[in-house]
Image (tube, rainbow, N blue to C red; front, side):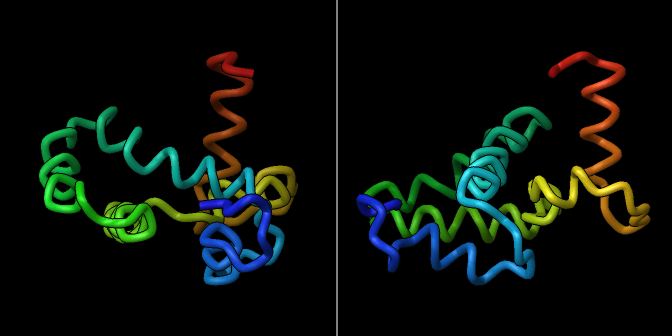
Length: 111
């Protein structure tokens, strides 16, 4: 997916498709990894497995596109993974990324 750092690779293309101007590659990878992790964590393992099974012989790009589409249908949003948004002190009532990060950093001690 990274294609040895080639500027015209799958991850860079997907970064450009988001409406998040400061989203870094590692931010996008966290977003992408959380799509199947969230499905498993919240009891949708069978759903995501059923969606992925027909794609097992497909290219990694087709599988990644299916995962991203599944994520967008289930409310996964790249802006919630943007470190500049999370670090901002601006209150945004339409975004859960910063409050959730604050909560698990301060109350749950994940970091």
